Amino acid sequence: MTVAAGIGYALLALGPSLSLFLSVIAKKPFLILTVLASTLLWLISLIVLSGVWRAFLPLKSTTWWPYAILIITSVGFQEGLRVLLWRAYKRLEDILDAFADRVSKPRLFLTDKMQIALAGGLGHGVAHAVFFCLSLLTPAFGPATFFVERCAQIPFFLVSAQIALTFVTIHTFSMVIAFNGYAQGNKVDQYFVPAIHLVAGMVTLVNFASGGCVIGIPILYLMAVLTLIHCGKMVFRRLTEIRSRQGRVDGSPPQGHDMEVNQLSKYPSWKFASAIIGA
Image 1 (cartoon, rainbow, N blue to C red):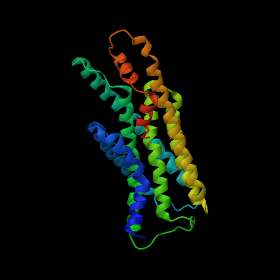
Image 2 (image 1 turned 60 degrees about the vertical axis):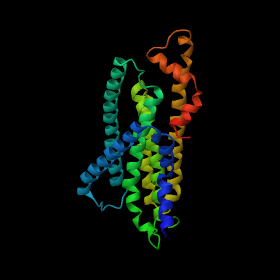
Image 3 (image 1 turned 180 degrees about the horizontal axis):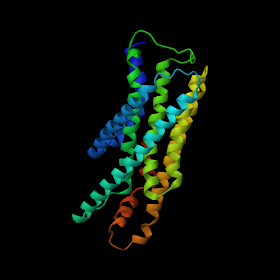
Image 4 (image 1 turned 30 degrees about the vertical axis):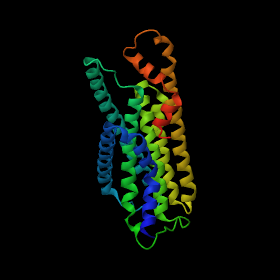
């Protein structure tokens, strides 16, 4: 292959994330810092997890179940870390809100909270892509490509880039769903995120079957689309709920949460929803 092909694989894996970063994240320095901190945190967590499993690798079994155990422990570790990240963010949010009250400034708007979650999710997705895809792409810049016996239809680098794209999408928008679920006590959102993560991880085991990548990759794309749809519906619902409260604050000075209502009422809900999902 050529340099162009290598760059193409990298852009396939991270191109949408780059677009999301430039269109939404780059406008606010705090979100940039959030992405960088999140990426570093998740990279460290993946390195720690790989260090734990290093004692058992390579797995000499030809069956799939040892890899299933690896995926289950990995997903469980990452979802536990997500909860800890939420608790740390919540404490930071309380500090910022208390400071805003002291200086008579508005608290964080709902859209601010969602964009912070989006930035944290983007960091998670980028860390996954760097760890599992970009680290493998160095040979793709050489004069040849590489195929594996069980997926002879598609170059290995293309398979890796497409899997990375799906997981970047899942991780990015799962964070928005999860943070909303924790904040609202919504069990559906709380269970959706680890469920979609675990199912997507298990789907990658299909690649062990001959020609499995032809089936596994479309399923992963479907999982990514389901995550996007669920996130979009959740964002639209939350923004619509806020806008519906506008009638209760009309004719009275906006205070506290009512300032958020007035702020959101200036724009249609779809505009904010599209900003959150990077459309």
